[in-house]
Length: 114
Image (cartoon, rainbow, N blue to C red; front, side, top):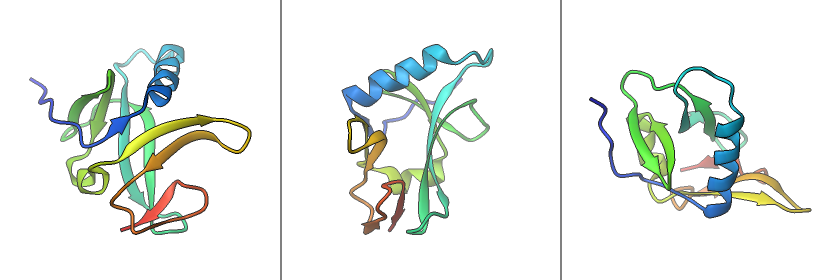
């Protein structure tokens, strides 16, 4: 039985619509989840992970604003309170991470320091 826990993040309506579109276009036969996490690297020290993926052993399964997500428990401390948004304008296009835990972020918005 999968454990579904309280989501540490929020997905805006515009991001939810874009993620729903990406899920609908996925041709993968496996059950897909949105993997949300962090990894070392990027110009500020850590980068965000946001990708369609399969559930792996140890993942926490969460439904966030209607999107099935998996998060590695060790990553959750960096994500608590974060909001994922989608921008589709002339000045920016893509997912935007608004993270209150970041002490600084780089200009690209996908790298941060804690």
